[in-house]
Length: 326
Image 1 (cartoon, helix red, strand yellow):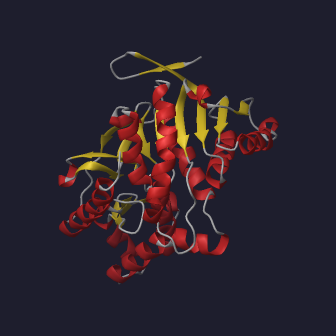
Image 2: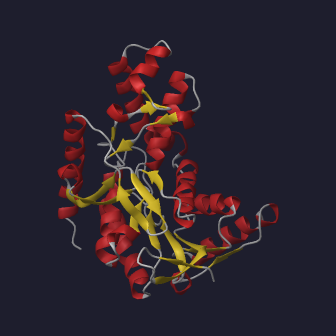
């Protein structure tokens, strides 16, 4: 087993080639497929309350292994997650048409109360990656119930929202979206906001680049693009009842940053410790992500209006978190 080490050089009992996925619905199975195709793991264990569902997904996905690299994919139990480097939690009730992510709180907190103690009781030392919604609240719940160090409990946060923003801006400016450097921050939900004041296209301020491309009505364009990004999931759910491919790729990206100790800057959800005057709740801000989870948050430039909106987003989440029986 290949082990990884923490920053103090104390060995952690985790296998960098192993990932566990808890929850085998659309998101969990799509994430498992994306990770299989990536080839970054040699072992993928799937866990679901319906063991047959997990077994069926494992068998189906494993039939693609001959086209990538050798790996073991199987349905397991919580005993199989002990040495996993990353424990991905997608289990939870699905968001229905017309329902907000925050509407899912009580149902999914109840589900987490059955999952997290199973992880805690086995003294797992990997990174917990929460994907189920509402992801910020559930990341907070997972940290509180597990007792894990805060850096090792992260949520997929606004990694997908940020990808959606880059995609929209790339289309708007007719440039490769990978050259767009901009973040969605705050809640993964209705109070999220685009950090326009720090956005660039390959180092060129966004407004300057827009004018280079013949776009001058910045405020209207920004408002329209942010609204489209915020409503992307609702649009998809209305049309096909669930979103799963985009988030599966976000899971793949975050896992790659952890497994490769990339020190990648990603807007994952993690506990705020006073940044921008926000304490005691998980929400998304750009952070350095490596083998130990979140290493450090990146203090991107925000104007006064953006800071105010970020604090409003945090207050909404804190109010909900304060009503939970943990």
